[in-house]
Image (cartoon, rainbow, N blue to C red; front, side, top):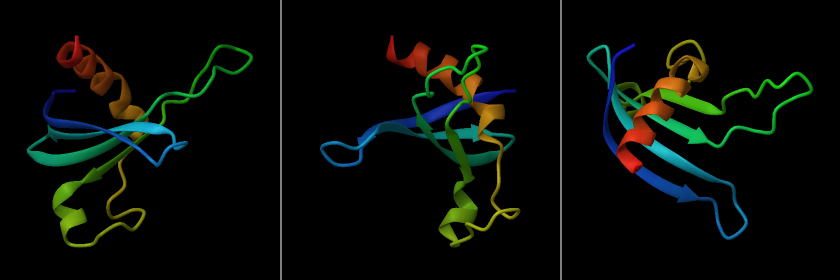
Length: 90
């Protein structure tokens, strides 16, 4: 999967809110938005589900947020985004 990052912003939902990164990136000639929270604690067998939501920005600008119309598997993008974030922030 070939991704390139355009912009990263760190956010926090209020004083006690959980922090996350908003990432604008390019994928397959589409401009996308990922919301990347830190992964939760691993379960009893060591698995931690990546907490990542991904949207097509063009569809968002048209107000399209419905499942099946602007639905992207965040777990398919999380690892690659994490690698790129590490490169950019280190």
